[in-house]
Each structure stands twice: as structure tokens, then as C-alpha cells.
Image (tube, rainbow, N blue to C red; front, side, top):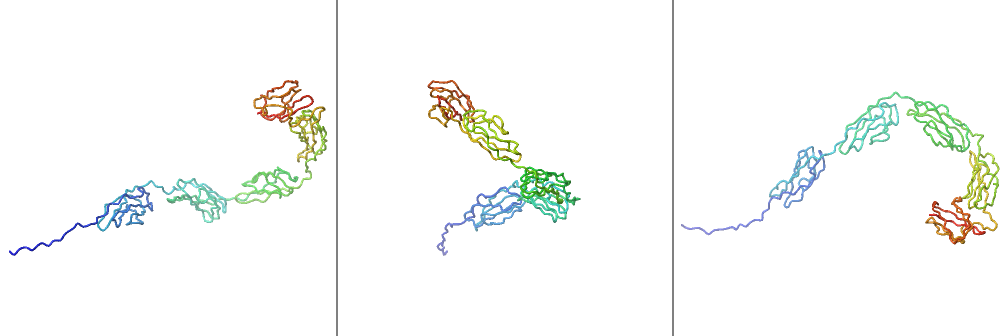
Length: 460
């Protein structure tokens, strides 16, 4: 044998080889959808080494964008099922990652509206006819249709419309709508009515035919007119209807002028002719009385003086007299007449009177009164530093007078005497109980010899 040659060898090393991608992670997106729901997004995180992603959706659903990427948008059909995806590269394809999709409890289009309420017979060119329905659950709007030539003047889109008809009739229809869809129509057949006519003119107007300038509260009335639904009144320039507009009876405040008061009757068909009443200026209009003459009576009075008389002469045309007296004084008799009697309190001031009748009141006539000087006794002053009392305000129901006195009297804010003591006291302190007094302002007078001292006290 000749023999074998030496071996020739090739060294084989391990290669760095690629593999198929890993299965995608969990799919993010809705797991419950409505029938026919559009624009639903599903996505995954990117998979290392993947070059493309293969998505599958339930039968009837369509991938409208994103196929081959990590995110798709789906328009669903009527069915549900699994949304799946795998990752692919040149080496191979991963296992599927799936998300089970279930049917959601989804909203639907609204139900058909119920019966339409309104007239089923209308007149040619009848205006202001109202049609309405009850609200429909889930509806967000309502679509009304009316016969040719008719116009919806208000309420379109709501549960109640107002219609002005033309010369044609037909059907008034409505459907309910929401974002899911539109219901079937509900319709009401409209037919031509046997229509009437405008009302007759009102009969005569009852009320004053002569008035004074600025007379107020004057009533005018008519009998009701058959088929009329409202009444239109007009009054002279400067006059005002204060109540009753649209009815058979009005109340009028006149101004300086006169003229006609007129009224017509109206219904949906038309307006009657006017019925008018001529109003003229009265020759017997009165006026407020003149101011009374001078008041007769005392001009100087003493504190707490009673039964002081004041009087005036009669005023032509006056039916009453209104007297006013100073704060704290009281009219004990005669109010409303030409003579009064007055009981005064601790202050004087104006005594005034005016004259009145049904046309008004006159200006006041006044007489100024002042407090009298009593021999050896000073007039009261607002406060006297010689009168020492405490506590003031009185908070414990007890008032103490320092020093002796001949007498004291306490008056309320209206000048009425509420307490008095005529027993002379020579004690250093005298305590008076005010427990029964209401809270408020009072005045105390204390006489010492020839002097009357005066002070305001407050009871708390």
C-alpha cells in the first residue's frame, strides 16, 4: 500500500445567532365595547427584536389604523371576541397575546315619543297653536315637522312648540334624538276646523263721564263679549290703567287731560271695532282746604300742665282737622275738630293743626309754646350738676338720690308721670326702687326749696 495523506481541518466556532421575538406583553384597551362602537384603541409595549406586529380582531370589526405597529384603532361591528397580536422578525413569529372582548351594557337611541297634545282641527292661518309631548328618557333633543306653510315660532328642539299655520293642513310630527340615534316619528293628523269670526264690538262702557284732573281709582266696565279671549283698552293721554288690562273691567288714574276711554274685543280670529265713552272735565271738582287761621291758646305752659285748650276758627271746605303737639304732650280730647285739650309733659314746642277734606290737606298752622317761669323756681334744664343720683344707667333696679328734697317725680320718654313722692326727705341718701320699670329712658324732677332739678336716667 502506498499510504494516507495528512488531514486538512476547518475550525468551526459557535455563531452569535438571532431568534424569534418574545410574546408581546398585556394588551391595553377596553375589554367591553358596544355594538357598532367606533374608534377603540388597543396598544402593547414594543418587543425587543420585533420588526412588525400582526393584529387580529373579532369578526365584523375593522382595524382602521395602526396595523403592523404597537397601537391600533378598531371600529367594532355587532360581534365581540378576542383582540390578539404577535411580534415578528426575519427569524420568526412569537406566540399570540390576546385580550378577550365582551359586550358592554350600552345606550340606545331614544324611544318614540308618546302622544302629541294639541289641537287636531285648526283654522286657516290660525296663529299661536301649541303642541307638546312628555319628555322621553335619554333624549337630548326633539325634531318637529309641521305642514307646508306652517311655521314653528318657538320651542323647536324642546318638548313643546308654538305653531303659526298657513292655509294648508297635514301632520305635526316629532322624534327624539340622542348621540346614539333618532327614534321613529310620532305624528298627529291636523284637519281643517269650522272656524268662527272676530268677536262683536263690546256694548256700552259703564263709568264716570266727568272726572277731575288727577282723579284716581276710576273704574270702567263692559259686559263680556261672546268668543272674546281678551280686551284691549285705551285711555286719554296722561291717564294710566292701574289694573284690569285685558279684562272686562279696568281702574284708571287720570292726569290733567280728558278724552275717550275705548275698548275692543279680541280672539284668535281677529279684533272687533272699538266701543268708546267720551270723558269730559267735571265742573264740580274740589280742592284741599286753605290753611287754618291763627291758633288761640297759651303760649307759655308749665311742665306737666294739663287740660290746656287750643282752638281755631272753622276753615271753609274742611271736613276734619289734624292737630300735632310737642313730644311728651297728649291730646286728651277734640282731635279732628277745631278745638283740642292737651296735657303737657316736661317739654314745650309747636302746637300745629291742618285742615283736610277728600281732596287733601292744607299746610300746617303752628303756635310756639315755651315753658313758663315760676316765681322763685328756675326752669328745668337738660341736666343739673346740683342733682346727684347713681347709678345711671340703673342696672340693679335701684336709684339713689343724694341729699334731701321736698318731692320728686319720674316721667317716661313720652312725658307721662310714672312715679311721684310728695313726702319731704332730709336723709343723706334716698333709694328708689325701679324694679317694675321697663328698660328705657326716663326723666326725674327733684324740688329742693325754690329750685326744681332735672336729670335724664336710663334703666337697663
